[in-house]
Length: 93
Image (cartoon, rainbow, N blue to C red):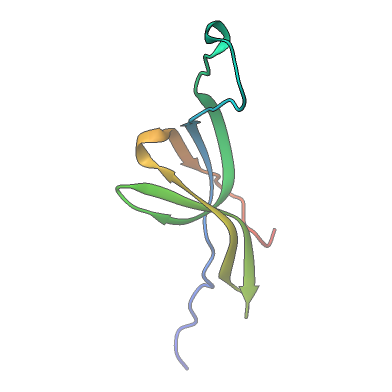
């Protein structure tokens, strides 16, 4: 009998990043100032590239392993302040 492999599980991550901000409608010039937004995203790391981290908020499972994702955000690497894995947490705990 062949060696049984571990089911595919996406790691859970925390990403701290900066997002753009915008204001809608008319504003006086003295009030027309918007700073960057500091954001924190927690989710399942789907993909990491030189350009971006792709993080999903929901994961579906089939036959005991992660098979699909929903509500994914791709955060540009240039916007990321830091990110890290959440150790010891599994989707099925």
